Image (cartoon, rainbow, N blue to C red):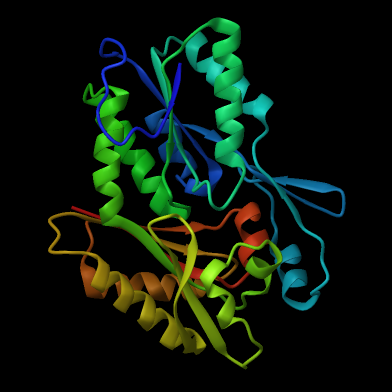
Length: 303
């Protein structure tokens, strides 16, 4: 069997002892943390001029990002992890002793990644017989998705079976999200991923779009600001409006070839929120292919 995002607990089989947690590279789980928590991360990839850049590879992309800023006709092609790669990873989990699998995936509205995982689950069940494979559409992306992945690991370590983990993730998703500002919407427009944000397209000098995801996992506009200072103030304002009276707050500052700006946003976030944890993470090549360089954002998870 494989199960896609149950909305309530359904007892399909006896509680399991070992749950393998899998996600994709868009979740931006820091590699050292993924290794420590034994999270299997499926890498997406970008192809440019016959070169393939895998998300988890250590490659200097500064020259490419500069070209993206000034050469508007670059052809960048992104790829989800293949069905075969998902199949291999799922099977490796079984061979390693996992008793169930839980894939916490990128919003299915943004990529074919979730569909590839579904196909792989079907293939494995057809070959090996029914297996407790659970596929959870996070309706998230970026480090916000990563926060849900980390929550799933902690729940699994405490003995929760997949059904209970999914029920908890449905609740935690209401306290998780992100907001980001872009230099341009051109790259999102190319991939058809801007949805309701389309009206914000334009060439006004220094007018920077600020975006987030809605409950369906689709890109939506938040506002437009003039210059990075106003954009970062809007990011802080939006996040402050979303987090409640928290006892614990995790933040992730995200950027695409904008490290100095990310460090400034980190300082602003620490001053405003005094979070329990905060770190800076780079957008992966696949993500930059859709957003363009210069993105700056903040992901949050509160309780």
